[in-house]
Image 1 (cartoon, rainbow, N blue to C red):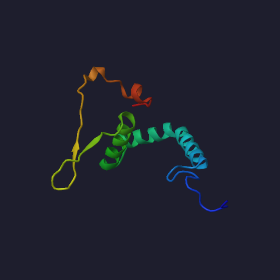
Image 2: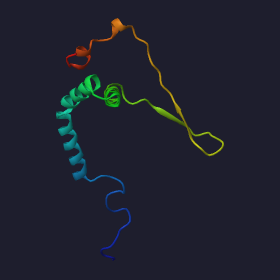
Image 3: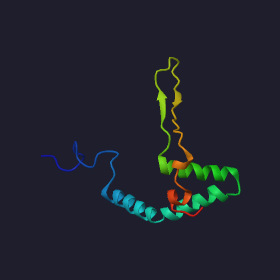
Image 4: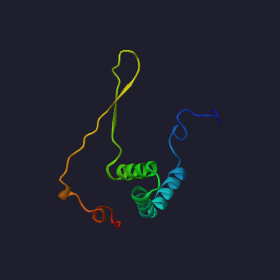
Length: 111
């Protein structure tokens, strides 16, 4: 009977995370959640009072991405020349302004 060495099918599958790594990720995630209100408030301040237009746009996009998720981008795999051309789909619903919540009601932050 052979002893030692590599045995077929033994060990953790390639690419899977160890229990220690999973625990570290969960711990970091919990720590980040504790500071999420402060981070959102900072983004709100930059979006409304930022010194540069780029900073305001970036902060506003970050808030929208967290509130509604990032827009999905579909990829067309059927091109004949071997290149992939992105097809971006975006739907915008038009809402009555009266139906929109106030800034403070929507975010919990003062205007």
